Picture 1 (cartoon, rainbow, N blue to C red):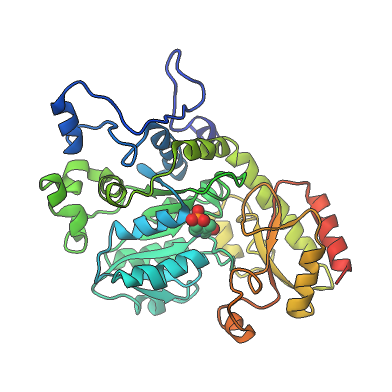
Picture 2 (picture 1 turned 90 degrees about the vertical axis):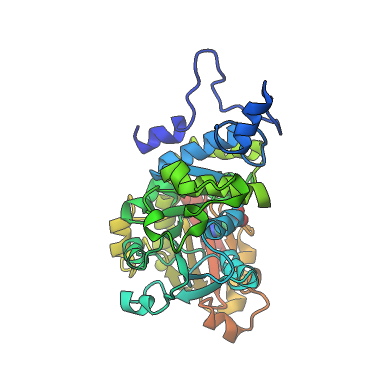
Length: 424
Ligand SMILES: *Cc1c(COP(=O)(O)O)cnc(C)c1O
């Protein structure tokens, strides 16, 4: 099946007389006829559902669709994008381990790594994603267990050279994890460039209607854990909580996702409600149509903003002349990487605020990547505790506006931007 067909039919094929739409399986538990059958499930000797915290049929069908879209072997849904990033790392790292991460990542992920996981004893080194291989190599330590990056960084718009990062990660015997939330697998499939594990905030384009918060982790099945057994004892060595079972020996290419389910989901429990999984699936059925429209409209609007005298700068990797043009051409289907861009208004912070307050169609919202166009001013919102100097150091100028282009007619959006600019 081609990717547009997978959006509709991937992960679930009803048999004769079964529901057309993925059914919401609202059941915590599943009934069995014998004690032994249930015991085998608990020992991971048999596969089947027994408690929704570990696995649920609705969630699994939707995870299967996302795995198919990314070209992976298996996937697991989580209750949020943050939970997906947390589990993707915790499935490989213990206290005392180290991770190399791109410095250009979502603010929530940065805080998770630099503050919360650090408190659990996992150290992170943040690298400039545009740095040379030699420079990035310097960040590695003997206890480094993975590399993390974001395909298109939120909000900086920086495009990750996935091939470069995969090469460096593999040279050091560790996998590359990439957050592919912004392009979605329709516009970029990181596994094709050597990435090993992909994460998503399904909250964004996959849902696409701002109706639920959710996440997903997909494994390519390509990383050879056994070859680096000393680094990944959790996947290779016997697990005492499953009578000495080795995930790699028992599950082969499914080891990473099985461990994530049987260990992290069992113990930490960030499972999504099957109803939320159902909403994600409705979004996925039209993802291929929507994301291309988001990306096309964003390119149109970025080009228009660029011609406006009152606009100081526009940052969008799809714009002709962006330093990321070559990477976009290599890694993406089409010239535009997503529907989110940043720009500034001449006159700094005050002018940007006046502009935003004058918008009528485009809402002021702490969200991105859904059907409704919206803006956010990091200096007033997500980063409001920082001084202008600190903002500059963080790469967020005080005039920066993040615009997420929705599915409205781009002519209407341009008219709204135009009337707001006239008020500045
Ligand atoms: C929103 C977002 C997240 C976090 O997702 P939540 O569902 O809000 O927890 C992670 N990565 C990126 C790129 C995001 O945009």
